[in-house]
Image (cartoon, rainbow, N blue to C red; front, side, top):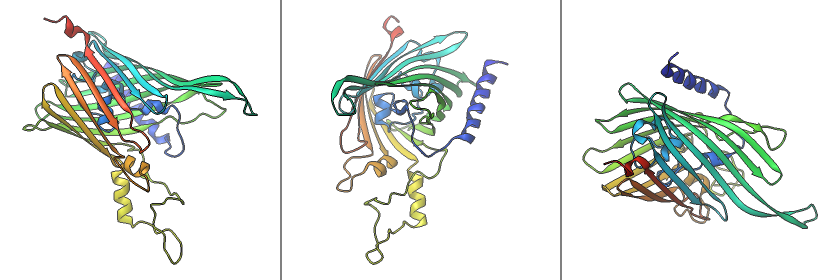
Length: 351
């Protein structure tokens, strides 16, 4: 069996596992779902279907974009998250003539130092908490580079004081790219796996998602727009909260007034969408912005909405050095700062 058939077999196996996936409940190792770069964060924090050499972090999210032109790409991402929490990654891309293109990454999320107390509230020391992951990605181009497949293998662990857990997950991605029209389409199955060692007796679910991303760079304008669909494995993304202050109450019967079926349909529909825009005014600058309707609905405040659901960023490109900065308004409490630095090592000694 050749390599292409093996990759197709792996993708079909991944699709079959969706038959057993569940949509409710909580998940663990959610650091696997954090944006892999400032550019991704500025574009909504989800799948980006773009094939270019300005952000070498993207293969961690979309391994199907791995190709020979990305070889020796190096990236570092760091986010000053909430309080003392910091997360980010290092990754390096290498192409091997006979084997293909690989991506090697180390992800981390540290949550700072905490005071440890006994059952009486007496301080007995301090402890730290963190999540860590190793990622090996592989990508292969097919049919004159129009189609490509990719896969990530993830090994991860978390250490929270006296609690320890580890596990493994895989991502599968398939992309179509049309160079004459500057159109790209990617399907991603993300975080299919399990815990090896649960925190307690029961294994918990990983943050699985199925996403579809479409990207098109306009021919006569320096603009690329992106449409991302997420949580494709489930329709209903809302939940009934009896204490929801946004639900109107009947003044006579004191009962909640339900939305009409049409409004419920469109509310659920747009919760699956993220809309992103990238403006490329000059060679050395790029501007990103996005809107996520689901984040807007889930994290809004009754008193004010603010910029919740919006994200934006800036990229600076000097020779083969790319620096991205982004801010994402996921709530009203704090807006993290995202920084990403990437370059291609072999560009420094090319003539």
